[in-house]
Amino acid sequence: MVASALAQTSPETLARPSAGASLDIDNVSHAFNLDGSTLHVLDHVSFDVKPGEFVALLGPSGCGKSTLLRLIAGLEPPNAGALKVNGQTITGPDPSRVVVFQDPTLYPWRTVWRNVALGPEAQGKLKESRGRVDEAIDLVGLGQFSKAYPHQLSGGMAQRVALARALVNDPSILILDEPLGKLDSLTRLTMQSELVSLWQEKGFTAILVTHDVEEALFLSTRVIIFSNRPARIKADFEVDLPYPRHRGDPRLAELRHRSLAELGLDSTW
Amino acid sequence: MSTLSENTIGQRSGRNGTLLGLAAAGAWALVAATTGLLPDVGDWPETENLAIAGAIIAVLLAASALLQRVSPALGRWLVDKSPWLIAIALFLSVWQLASAKLGWLPQPFFPPPQGIIEVFTYDYAELGISLVASAQLLIVGFIYGGVVGFIGGVALGWSQLAAYWIHPILRFVGPLPSTALLPIIFFAFPSSYSASIFLVALAVAFPMTVLTWSGIASVNPAYYDVARTLGASPLALVLKVAIPASLPYVFVGLFMALGAAFSSLMVAELLGVKAGLGFFIQWSQGWGSYNSVFTAVLVLALLCSFSITALFKIRGRVLSWQKGLVKW
Ligand SMILES: Nc1ncnc2c1ncn2[C@@H]1O[C@H](COP(=O)(O)OP(=O)(O)OP(=O)(O)O)[C@@H](O)[C@H]1O
Ligand SMILES: [Mg+2]
Image 1 (spheres, chains in turn orange, blue):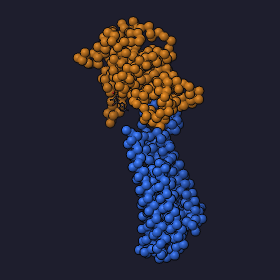
Image 2 (cartoon, chains in turn red, brown):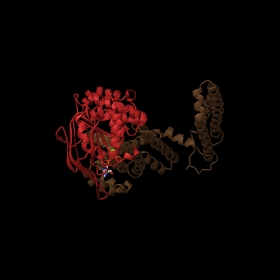
Image 3 (cartoon, helix red, strand yellow):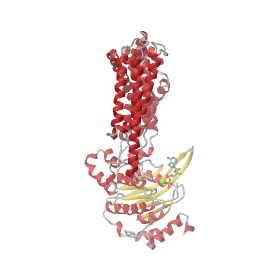
Image 4 (tube, chains in turn brown, orange):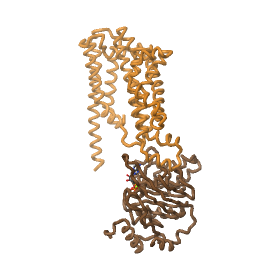
C-alpha cells in the first residue's frame, strides 16, 4: 500500500532518455535437485522493471537472489513462469544482458585488456571495438593496468575490471550480483557513486543484488525485498529521492528502518 | 652506510672469488697431473690430450681468479661456479686413478675419461647420426601422441558422445604398457621406423589424454557462465575458455608423456629400429666397445635433459600468467 503511494511520487530522475530495456518477470518459480530432494528456491516471483530503472534486490542469504539473476541472464531456464525483455521471452544468454558476478571471475591467463575485450572478441567485433575496450578500462580507472594479469590486481581492481568487461558490451540491462561485496568500505563508497554516475550516463536498466540495505537505498530507484527461501516478494517500494543522494538524508534513514523491519531485523534499530 | 656494507660484501666476495678460483685451478691441475704424469694400464690415445686440456682449464681458472678484481662479473661467476668445477675435477681425478692408472675398476668395462673422449673424436659421425635418429623418433612420436592425446582429452572432457566412445577404449588400452604390444606393432607396421613412431606416440597419448581431460573437467564453471553472457559460442567456449584454463594440466601431461616417450624410445631402438642411440648402445656392447656404450648413454642423458629443459622453457612462456611456477 505504501509502495503504491510512493510510486506516484516517483522522482523526476527516472524520466530521462534511456537505452535500457524493460524486464517482465511473470510468476517465476524455480527449484533445484539437492541429493534427490527438491529445494524450492523461487516461489511465484512476479515484478516488472521499467526501462532505465535501478532495482535493488534485498533478501536473506541463500534465499535465491543469485538464482533469479541467473534466470534473467538466461544461463538457466526457469522451472515455471516466464521472463521477458522488451516483451520477448528470454531463451538464452545475450551480451545485451551482462552479469557482474559475486566473484570477479577474471580469466587468469588474459591480461586486463584481453579480459575486457572478451565480449567483443566472442561476438566477432573486436576490430572495431578496440577503442571501446580502452574507454571501458579508463572508465573504471585502470588505464595503467591494461597489460597486468589478474593475479597482479587487488580485489577492488579485479572487481572494477569485471565491471568494465560488462560495460564494454553496452548492455541494456546490467545485472549486478553483490559486485561490491568483497571491497573494503572506502572503495565500496567510491564505487557506489561511480555506479550511479555510470547508470545516469548510459541509461541502462540495472538489477542489483546486495546484502547492504544502505547500499540498496543509496543506489536504486526501487527496492524489492525477498522472504527466506523459497524467495517470495515481501516488499517492493520506490526510493523517491533525487541524485546525487546524501547518506545522511533523514528520508534514507526512514526507508532503512522500514527495510530492516521487512528483513526481520527491526530490533536492531 | 649502505655503500659501506656493500663494499665489505664486495670485498668479501672478491676474496672468496680469488680463493675459490685458485682452488678450482688446483683441482683441474690435479686432473692434468693424475692423467698426464702416471702411466696408463691400457692403451688410450687421448690420455695426453686430456692432460693438456686439464692443464689449460687450470691455467684459465687461475688467470680468472687473479683477474676477477678487475671484472666483478667474473668474480661472481667464480663464486657461483667454482664449487661445481672443483667437484667435477675431483670426480675426474678419482675416476682417472681408479680406471686408467690403478686399474681398480675392471677394464674394459669401466673406461677412463679419455676412453669417452676417444669415442667423440673417432666415432663422432656415427654418434651424430644416432643422435639425430633418436631425436627424430622422439620428436615425431611425441608430436603425434601429444596431438592425439590432447584432442582426445578435450573431446572426453567436452562431449558426452566422445566420452561414450573414447572412455572405454582409454580404460582398456591406456594402462597397457605399450612395450607389451611390441611384437604385434613390429609386424603390423610396414617399417620398423613407423612402428617405433607408433610405439612412442602410444606411450605419449595416454598420459596426455588423461591429464588434458582432468584439466578440462576441473575448469571453474563460472568461467563458462561469464563467457556465455558475453556472447561466446560453444566453439569459443572450448577454444577461449576450456583449453587455456586447462593448460597447466596439459603441461603436467606433457612432462609425464615425455618420460614415457624416453622409455618407449629405448625399447623401440633396442629391439626394433636399426638406428638411434639405443641401437648404438646395443651394437657397441655386442662389439665389446664399452667406452662407446658409456658415451652413448652420456649423449642420451643430454638429449633427455635438453628435451625437459626445452619443455620447461615453453611452459614458462605459455603459462607466464601463473604465479609461482617451478623454475628449471
Ligand atoms: N546449482 C545448484 N544446485 C543446487 N542447489 C543450488 C544451486 N544453485 C543454488 N542452489 C541453492 O539455491 C539456494 C539459493 O541460492 P542463491 O545462490 O540464489 O542464493 P542467494 O540469495 O544469492 O544467496 P547469497 O546472498 O548468500 O548469495 C541456496 O540454498 C543454494 O544452496
Ligand atoms: Mg548470491
